[in-house]
Length: 421
Image (cartoon, rainbow, N blue to C red; front, top):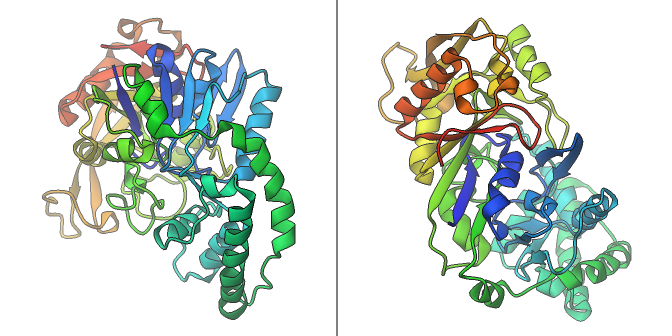
């Protein structure tokens, strides 16, 4: 069975853990978009692993993990991630980690540009300043450096020199920045190229040879950070939704059997942009503290709010979700009352028809549920959950028209309850 796993909110839904769990019966795990602005966290034997570029399936010895052409790769971050994982005992070699030659590279000038543009904006987007957007810009304007260029010293030298001439002129004239020097970047990055080169693999031929094996396609971020369908302009710079999986992986010959959507039992987002169910004060602090809601990549405190089913229903449609996976149910355990947004209203109180173009101009209407005050972490199977928790999940299923396949009730690898396969 071949599966796609995507986030249904604004990212940080706990996809890393879910991917680690679901890939038990998969052969090849492919990351298909985004860059190191995303972070997936998995806890195994009380040891925490944070992934930024490498699929979390690398923790299982018999899996092949692939970084697809739709991903933008910061070579420095990738080498650091490989080094850190190896230091923790994770086996990584050219046999179990493959990188597409058509990935575009995030270079130091992309990170500088990202920061300078954010500082100059009158209305901040909340970028992670990792250089993701500027790298995708170069890809589309056809001046990017691809992995295949990077590992060829002559090509890399020519492209780096050409790009620096253009970037430095912009830095100087537009931002008053001194710019970057060729030698500093080349001397560092040429060494990184030699470390990464053994992992580079032509995916077209590789996937053709593996087409009868089982695949899991891993997305980063969440549906409402999608550059087309998200809360633009407060979005990422790639298409994060399920239909992009095969394009971002460079694989057309595989039939997709299921599309799994991951959502928290409440809602969070990082950065700027509209957030209809956002809480403040002690309620927000409860979720942030009990749920550990701080960015895996940036460490920034996440904005927190109630579950938004109107938002999720839109995400289910956009991704054609066939199975819902609910995470962090246990964070709700000690609440007396739990709220869920079930519709939006306009400023005049009239109900919003369809999905609004601007989430900043509507207000949420809530349905309330009684809390359960029973530790979900103690459950060994779905039926062990409190009846009120099961009612909460049943309501979500009914509203969205999609069944919940799994419920995560803790950060540990094994804290996943199967509801149906």
